[in-house]
Image 1 (cartoon, rainbow, N blue to C red):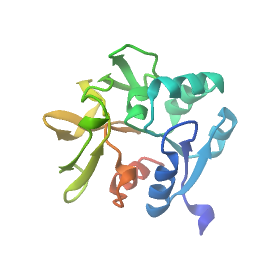
Image 2 (cartoon, rainbow, N blue to C red):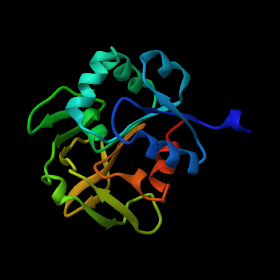
Image 3 (tube, rainbow, N blue to C red):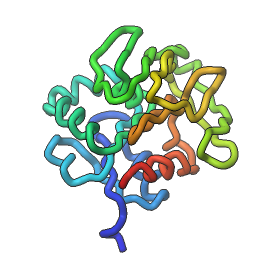
Image 4 (cartoon, rainbow, N blue to C red):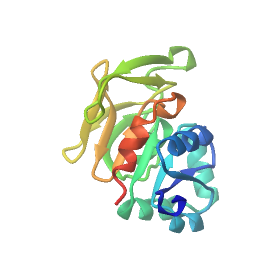
Length: 191
């Protein structure tokens, strides 16, 4: 039966990719660590985890993965959490930086402040039954959502879970709870 499971890569250059792997396994997918562009051809979808977006970009460039990641996202689903959400945006501020431009959103980095301003909140996202615990750690804020993107959840009035076609972003860390419903939502995007 394992050969029929969806193979979802987790970009394993920096950040808590292991927590995403555990969440994917709980959700019924086969998690695969991705460290090179060559590995992208063997997966159905990709998660770009939280971490530090500037560092992650440097490592992506070092591994010559920027264009392969952008091309992957043209045909297959990508889910970005926290720093991953920054990398999927078309516009990044505070400061401006390069991104993959896969979703029509504008994101402000570290908008909630430093580690001290991290928090756990309860959300009621669209498409997910019941409340959802959301862990925010130096979270970015989605400041702009384009017409093609859809807000699935807000916190304090700001979008925190947004989808656009095959892609999904969260400014929180769903992998840090035992609840795999956000990962299950992402798996539904794989055809």
